[in-house]
Image (cartoon, rainbow, N blue to C red; front, side, top):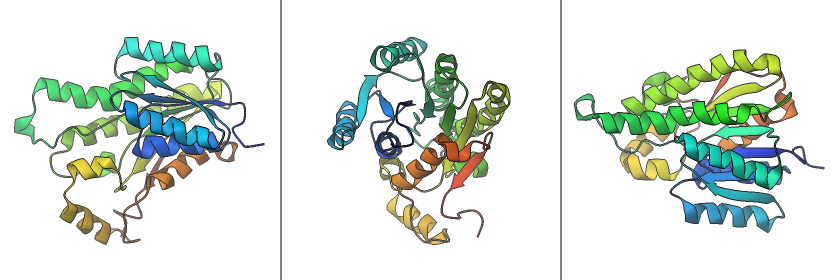
Length: 251
């Protein structure tokens, strides 16, 4: 029997890159996975196909994780498919959207970045907490940017992830007495579409060269850490923000 057999997992932003890797790894360990997506419908279908190819069980639900009504629909679809108990919640929805300096910000850009990266985490947790009991695990996706301020033009992204880091610690205190653990993972340079879209090749090469292991990370490596934090192997771990960046910032 796999370690998550009989358990239900929600993964926001689960259609591609790190979210897809997490969805697939949880399903391989026996979880029934709700793959949330918003814009990546084709990616969500590919994620489901990959899961079902090895006999896993999953559904895809379109929802804007920063919209309260959509979150409630995600909750309803989860109950409809898998019942009213959730054991693993992974808040992975997020994005950089554009690199902008302080003088280039406007209110709509501020709202977009903060809502997708932080508001989503807050209100998805709020919606699903009542469905989670003793032994449940919440894993939030923060970032190395939360600690070092991020690269050029990513101040709002870094700040939203800083808020996620702090919220993770606060929720570990609040939900711990209920038996719910809350942790975060903080990826550095991971080979994903995120960096394909927003990071120049020469910058990626430079950053990878400064990393002690001399390479970019893989989405599957982040997923392995998430699986550990979701599992009974980490039952005394909560309120932690785990760096996964090949040693970047410590050399």
